[in-house]
Length: 402
Image 1 (cartoon, rainbow, N blue to C red):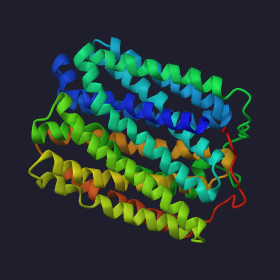
Image 2 (image 1 turned 180 degrees about the vertical axis):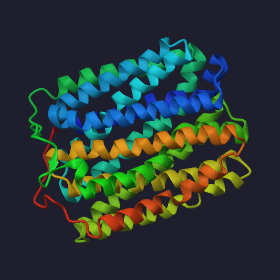
Image 3 (image 1 turned 90 degrees about the vertical axis):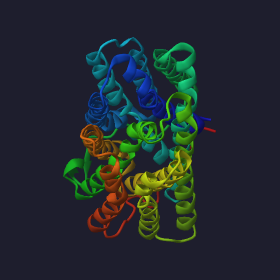
């Protein structure tokens, strides 16, 4: 039951951050935003998340799985609800920063939870399933949010999503009473006697996150706008093609996680399995510029679905890599620092996208970068971690519930 609850937290995380992207045409028309204004808001969200990750990883390790999940979801739900009462651009700026900073709890808490639940052999399945379920948030958002906005207005979409998160936080707190998560707070954030940010392998993972997360956040914040510009879709018309694209993300997570666990359980080395899955995932993103050449929205959605499948396959392996090479007591901090770096990449690309579009250059340069970003990330991993060796090979995992 607790595993199921942990999975739904990721859905809420994706829904809350996607509302502004899905309703961008409506909100922009109401509040008179330009493309550069929206790019600024997206970049501020990423900046808030990036710096939030610096504290979130440490906080998750100190609070433990039970308290960190409840606190994180409650905090970002309140931040999401605040959007419903924002009237000015400056108020939206404050809301986006707050939402980004509070949602930073989600990633390290989620990976720490998966590391506690699953053994190394099954960890990829857990992370893959988690990423796949999380993608449901991105699938549901473009289907449900326009309907809520059409009936009650766009502000109600923020308030309702936040209220659901508060209900989840209360349910998690009640469900975890008396559960020993075996994740007692650890001491100073060190790996092999050095702070995590001074460890070479941490920087290798962080660099890969910068390159891969940049493309993910480009799609997350600008894909609805792409469909609006290229095919004139808006409101409920955006839902089906976006749902198809994000269905690819869910499928990529499931395939990468399931196949990785199967190959590792069959005797394959973690080094070979992780890098093999990353390579296939990176190659799946290469055709993304073809979306610009398709004559219809459904063809473009299919190309983007393949790219998002590649991202989530790569991301599943990368998070598995963190759990592989990091002692469990420090997983939150290494995840948090890596996510900080990834979100800085997301901050840059979201702002660059706004400037690129405002300059009339279109999506061509942005999709060209996306096509090669994962291959560059894999190259960095191959250089920094020529051989992946688990630090806790005897780790059997911990059951959090039943």
